[in-house]
Image 1: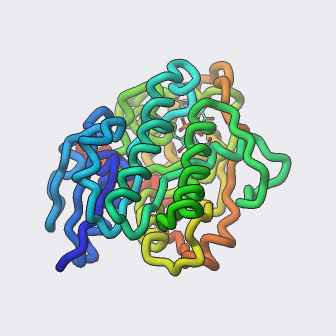
Image 2 (image 1 turned 45 degrees about the horizontal axis):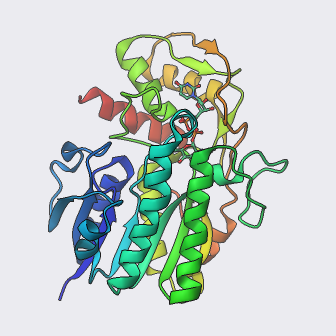
Length: 313
Ligand code: UD1
């Protein structure tokens, strides 16, 4: 019998890329579980293979438990993302990212799921004195979002230790690529930068633009999720960085994007955001060694592919 794989947040930006990567392997039927709050049906348009979209909310245990039951693997990506959104409006993000996360782990345990891959966040590190950031560093969340995502790592490891549910946490660094929605002020910065290019307007950079991020292309993250789902039992209960291993300042990235697009739109600058981390860069040693992580897409290649996608809209 073909195995069932569930992707929570499967109609979202990263989830839909993961759904595509899973279906391309051709060995599973995939269920995208999404409440369509930020996910969209059109993110799954053109996807080929055995895919079902179930519209359900992870906060509703009775709604998700039958969908998850009997799955071989669950990728838990559903969340209300964004650091500044969690600072401005912490209750919904707490409910989804913490209470909803707990319901997903509960349903996975009750439903006999073989393995859960949990989308954790690099924001858990906060500001560290040393770069790159390695998994053995003490977590130091600076925002509600970071604290919520860190709680998910603790629950992942607790469900493994107490109940034997196989879990792996991947700390996503700043993921970018096609289908990242630029429409909210809380959207990922590279989707906003691409929208600015398309509209011929200058972006606003918060702070001096010298903050840096480990921008990671979405297909590389999806690939690592699949590797984490297939790795041996020694990875269970553990946390791995899911980054590219490089870091670029916002000023550098905006420069590069203008060059690629052949335009000149000097950025505006505004005050730095509360809860913002200054620098972020993944140490990929453990992910490479234990999960076989092998990021393929450079920042420039990823920016070109993303801009190409924005041009199709
Ligand atoms: C954070 C996390 C990431 C998490 C993501 C979820 C860190 C290091 N990263 O990303 O792991 O998955 O939240 O949403 O904590 N900015 C501008 N102009 C804009 C928009 C943003 O200058 O119009 C700046 C921000 O102030 C920030 C940087 O761009 O310095 C990146 O912001 P964003 O894309 O929102 O992601 P993070 O908050 O870094």
